[in-house]
Length: 176
Picture 1 (cartoon, rainbow, N blue to C red):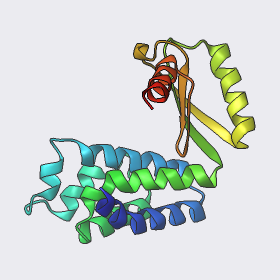
Picture 2 (tube, rainbow, N blue to C red):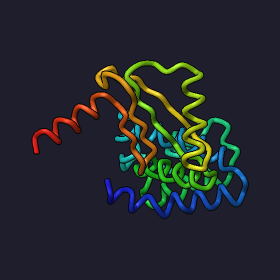
Picture 3 (tube, one colour):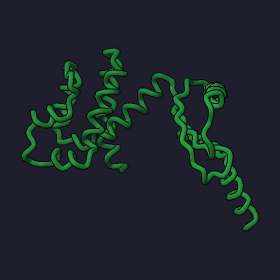
Picture 4 (tube, rainbow, N blue to C red):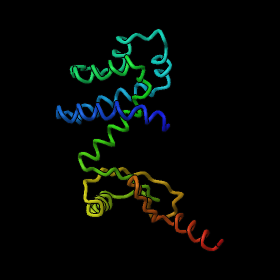
């Protein structure tokens, strides 16, 4: 994984720089996301690696249906020419990280023991916005095995306020 990220990083930086300079970050984000999803598909991956796959066929497969962004098509051509199409999922991931950082958006994943209401999500978003000093892109999942509470994962910062987490910490303290 680290090798693929190392190989994908210069392409992601180039894509981000070009998209930012042209003022098309959201468009590139959508196009890269679509191309990455197609490239990551189990049925498509062997096709892209096939020696019989021509550059035009790969572009037809990966380019968005409207396909009017010449810069994005040229980016895909560079990936094809350098044999880097399998890196598209990692390139898209790194692109999204750079975009979130540039737009000062922190992606937060909240896993709670029970479904959260709209009011709870809104107040949590406000509190996290204050804490991180950035806009928050919050996603929520439910995991009943937490027993109660929630786990907030904001990349480098993880706040475990779940009952299961507290029980685990108590068990570790008692064992020592």
